[in-house]
Length: 171
Length: 129
Length: 64
Image (cartoon, rainbow over all chains, first blue to last red):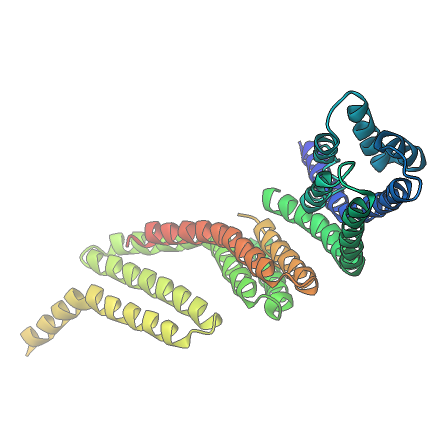
């Protein structure tokens, strides 16, 4: 009888600790995703403005140089365009499919906003749109870097403490 | 029965120190620990309480005529205990005014319970004179 | 009705105090107040049960 209680208590404690740890890593993942996205966007800008490549090629080249989370995004956009969808629709749909645990809702919205100028207007306007998005990403990364240490510690310790509380109350 | 007083003392000491360690951060929890400690101690001696009270009632049965007075005394003791318990909790929590009011209420209720006995006593005294 | 209740209340009190400090250090004062209140409600729940038992017993014992 006492063993079941101990096992239950350990399970509750472990799960709360893991939950706390997961939430504490969310910010770090977001920083990583955002900087990947920034690198890829700068590459894309280079392809569009300087190499004057057609959009599908530019996207394919960017996808080849990007890495995991962002690469899928560019591959999806490129495939949709090759299948005949309009560039802005393809971009918007792919943006809405961005992984929810790596980017926040704001990030997805701002990325989707780029759909209006991508592949559509002249290279200068597209470049301006991309620069705006990169600026937003920079600001977010700065903000996250500052609050990262604190929120990490908060969520980790809060997770463990809540686990202990639940065990104490239900024991 | 020998280990009981040790357990009661231990409960009191442990509750006191736990309350002390919480007094600075959450004074509320400290008072609650003290309350629960008091309740626990009461429940530890409750069986002996009822043994002592039934002893008194059997004495009063043997005496015969004064039966009603013993029940009055018991009720007075009960009111006194409850009033003291409530008043000491209020005083521990820092509300001395409330504590005094609870005690006052207890005193008045005791007078109300004992009133018939006092009346009878006065009548007896007056009949002698 | 064992001494375990006292330890439970003490543990809740200590954990709530620590959680308070952590939340205040991260700047979330409102949530600190909320957790203190929640812990208080849980503990009051236990205490009121025990005190009501106490008063019922006193009533029985003294024929109030």
